[in-house]
Image: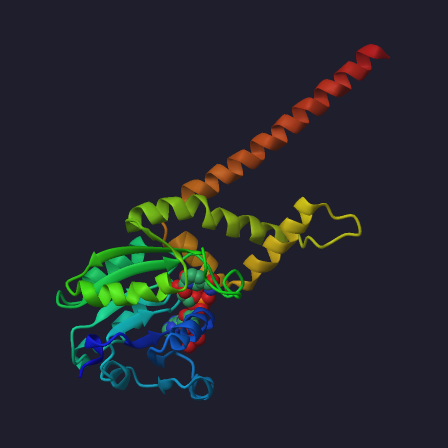
Length: 269
Ligand SMILES: NC(=O)c1ccc[n+]([C@@H]2O[C@H](COP(=O)([O-])OP(=O)(O)OC[C@H]3O[C@@H](n4cnc5c(N)ncnc54)[C@H](OP(=O)(O)O)[C@@H]3O)[C@@H](O)[C@H]2O)c1
């Protein structure tokens, strides 16, 4: 019997870096079967995890997966899609991506995948640090971009529902608008604090402890990930300009107040 008729699915992960490995651990725990392929050789790690690793993309696609889960960097998705001989697929397959921007993979997948292949664009709004003790109440965003096999799509979404994620269905465009104002700004502040090399002091306030923590978690993400949030989200440039403008305005307010105080001191003396 095909695994598409049973509860457990066969899921092929493309891109077995930090995030691909993180997702794989929970998906395996739920009883699904995982295969993987990646630019680097993860055959040893995969052997330990009970995952069949393919260094050859054709053999990977030939392996009759129900779902292909794209976990590559934002910057490399186009190149990875070009390297896929899609004619090797033996059955209708659900393509899912987890990139932290959404219009870019949606447009690319619609352009490159033939109409009989389903597309689900998703963004788990958590990672190995925030999700280290489980995924309960963490947000999982998704957009059913092109779904013909609703049952298979639901079974895939169930992976995250089962873990207690807060499921949010939203268009890729709405995601990118919101993420530019939230996630991209968070990473930008974290990176900026990293540039300033902020460190704990003997007199940290709780607020400053939060900033040090923010710096540490954002600096753990690859620069490929961070720059992808900017280069492949059309709303990010405006938010970066808003941030620059806001910092400039705050500085102006302080300088203005200082001038007022200095003027007052002069008239008093
Ligand atoms: N980390 C998170 O918390 C998080 C959360 C939600 C979503 N995501 C998304 O998940 C994806 C993976 O994120 P990540 O944290 O693992 O780090 P990343 O730096 O964004 O991506 C690393 C992955 O991309 C692959 N890759 C990079 N350049 C490549 C190229 N030129 N050709 C083929 N493959 C290439 C790497 O393969 P090799 O390892 O084989 O070199 C690795 O699997 C990203 O799209 C990210 O936006 C991440």
